Amino acid sequence: MFDGLSGRLQQTVKRLKGQGRLTDENMSQTLRDVRMALLEADVALPVAKDFIEQVRTQAQDQEVQQSLTPGQALIKIVQDELTRLMGQHNDGLNLSARPPVVILVAGLQGAGKTTSVAKLAKRLIDQDRKRVLLVSADIYRPAAIEQLKHLAGQVKADFFPSTSEQKPVDIVTAALDSAAKQSVDVLIVDTAGRLHIDQEMMAEIKAIHAAAKPVETLFVVDSMTGQDAVNTAKAFDEALPLTGIILTKTDGDARGGAALSIRQVTGKPIKFLGVGEKADALEAFHPERVASRILGMGDVLSLIEEVEQKVDHEQAQKLAKKLKKGKGFDLVDFRDQMTQMQSMGGISSLMEKMPGMANLGQAAQGQLDDKQTTQVIAIIDSMTGHERQFPAIIKGARKRRIAGGSGTQVQDVNRLLKQFMQMQKMMKKMRKGGMAKMMRSMKGQLPGF
Image (cartoon, rainbow, N blue to C red):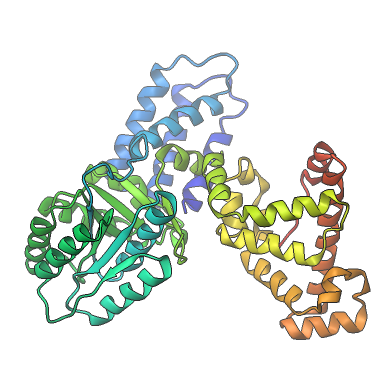
């Protein structure tokens, strides 16, 4: 997300390097470049204009310290304005009301509404330790009810059955009664999607809203639709009191215009980002962290939170004990590390959150390919248990057999073995307490997966 905008903004700031101070001349050119970058990212024109004027005012009023370069000064101004534009801070869900807390979820067909309901349920169950009940009020698509039932089972949420013969208001009323009797903490109501907002849809959703009395009314929009997403959210909010937005499919949106525009246009906060297809691919939206990512400064806080939530700590402790006892790091351990990386969104997702990764250059970034991580796992899976423990025995005939079994080439197997040997050396340095040496040896030598 924000790939194009991030690259353009960083190039623009770089041009100011070497300048003694911010002048009307260099600021004028820089702001023109920033404006073009925003418009190319599909940011709404009024939003882009307001952003530029705010940056201009800040740059003119700010007394830049002598220790700062013009580029650094502008980064700070742009970062502050990006954060302001997106809402300053994360607006979490209001879960303090008397249970069952009702969350009503609406959205157009195809925006990822039902999967977002399941992701939200998983987040509430895993992180907030809530008991969650899901119900579908979509009587127009029986498949939607079955889909939600299936997803509820996957994320370990309770499910309240409904049928296409029932009225949506009756379904919600019955679900609310059941939630109260079962001491459920949160009831999430999935509503029917439409191809577009119409009078029939709005009348139905208003009736459901009146019956459910939700604490949170969330609207799900597809970020890849750009300004259409912003306009749809605005039209919906005019008919119903929204409390927040879930922006989906952000992993496939290279522009990010919807994320930058939606708060300013609708006045409603983005509460979550859908960042993938997996059940745990839902991130809380932190404007200040997203602003840092856009400017290539990484997002260490989100990275730490992701590690805490998704890394198998028991497995990590076993590996640490194994290394401490002097036992070697083998291909089974290497495979486990690759699998852990995939569970956290893949290497590209991790690198996006690491400071300084934007300075790697396009060639180096092109090597960070999640498809090749999958290939690494396939190659290791094609080995025998003995080969994984003792990779030194893997020679010509074995390499050909492994390549054939994993659908790869012998050179792919060779590359994997070379990468593994590098990782093995790093692990030996860690065991000997040479963390500083290991970090120095890694500098500029990221393995190309």
